[in-house]
Length: 126
Image (cartoon, rainbow, N blue to C red; front, side):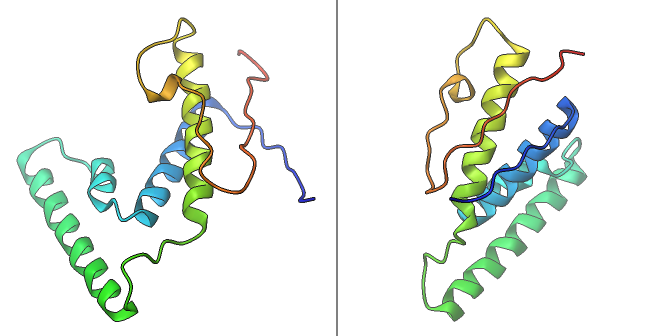
C-alpha cells in the first residue's frame, strides 16, 4: 500500500495547481497547442510571439520523435497529472457554481491512470 498525504491549499493555490497539472499533462499528450493558451495573447504582437513559440515547440517535438524512433513516448506521469487536474477542476467548478452547470468540469473525474483518484474537499469556507 502506498503512502497518502494531505496538502492544504488556498483557492488561488488550487487554481495554480490545476493549471500546472493541465499544462504538464497536455505536454505529455503532445497537445502543445493547448499550452500556448497560457501565454499572454492580449494583442497581435503577443499572439504572433505565442505562434512562434508553438511552432518552435512543435518542431522540437517532431525532431525528438524522429530521434527516439517512436511516436508514443508519453511519460507515465501524464495520466497521473491528468487525473489530478480533473479532480481539482471538478472541485473548483462546484465550489464556484454550487447549482451545477454544463461542461466536463461538472462531471465526475474519469480515472485514466492506475493510481486511485485524489480527494479534495473544502476545509474552510473563509
